[in-house]
Image 1 (tube, rainbow, N blue to C red):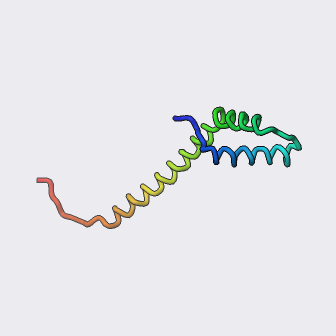
Image 2: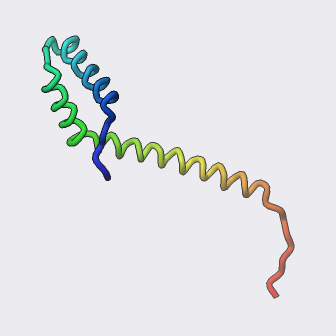
Image 3: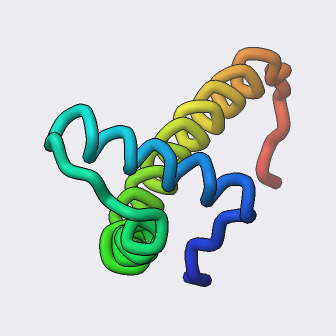
Length: 85
């Protein structure tokens, strides 16, 4: 798996969300620099768990759609009378 990277704009949004959370929920002021380090820590140490869960959820959806396709193909299959010999 490659590292989880965000664009500068995405990172700014995420940092702002973290800063707001710290202020409103924890009544703590966190600086921009510290918040960026915290976001990097979350991305590096915890992000893979969320990434893998997302992949698992996507795989479940794909498997369901493949089963639907398989069923649809079976429904349109034509009956034939081939013989072995």
